[in-house]
Length: 299
Image 1 (tube, rainbow, N blue to C red):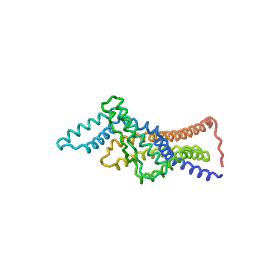
Image 2 (cartoon, rainbow, N blue to C red; image 1 turned 180 degrees about the horizontal axis):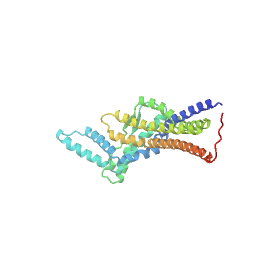
Image 3 (cartoon, helix red, strand yellow; image 1 turned 90 degrees about the vertical axis):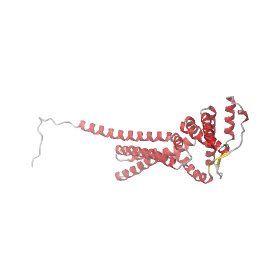
Image 4 (cartoon, rainbow, N blue to C red; image 1 turned 30 degrees about the vertical axis):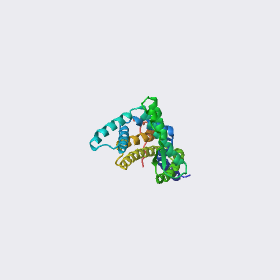
């Protein structure tokens, strides 16, 4: 194989590896980060204590209660304040954390089963198990009349039918890509370095390309956050949604920083080894003695 062909093949393999690295990180995060129930639970659990999330839940629950309770106009302000304080206090209890955990796991399980199955229709969550867990927790805490809380089967839609069909196709692709893309990126990068005529330069290009891809992934996460918050309905708290987005993408941001550090480390290693090689070659050349006459060839 000629040096020109080897250089061209090495460049193609390295470019493919650098392109696949951020996409592999993204697909792996979606498959094993969001798709795994235990990791999702561990990610969402700390949000139960987040102040912005608790405020948003308290506001939503208060609005729902006041829609069902009719009071005189002059009493709406005091009643609103009283109900909001009561709900806000509830968000500090163990029963609230139990409800938060149960609701999130129920929604996650319903969405993942719908994405992996072929059934049509909207994805709904029955709140009866959540209510039952809260009722047991309140009864355990000896709250008066907690055993009389009615457990009703109330279904809440978490994903519309038209959104489900579109997400299902993308999810199947992501599940496959989450396993193969990282492997392909490593194989292409290794092949590009091995095939190259100058492996040090190929290693330098691989490191710089990986760092650039990681930086672009970090930018994409930031842009995705901005677009997600901008597309929210006006009655949804942007601070609470931002806290949820940051929690879900924390692992992905960490991976982007690790890829950036890996790329910079590989590039610096290639630069330093090249400088050291030039230093060694220069030190091996014997210095000419000034007292020794130089031999000149005269015409």
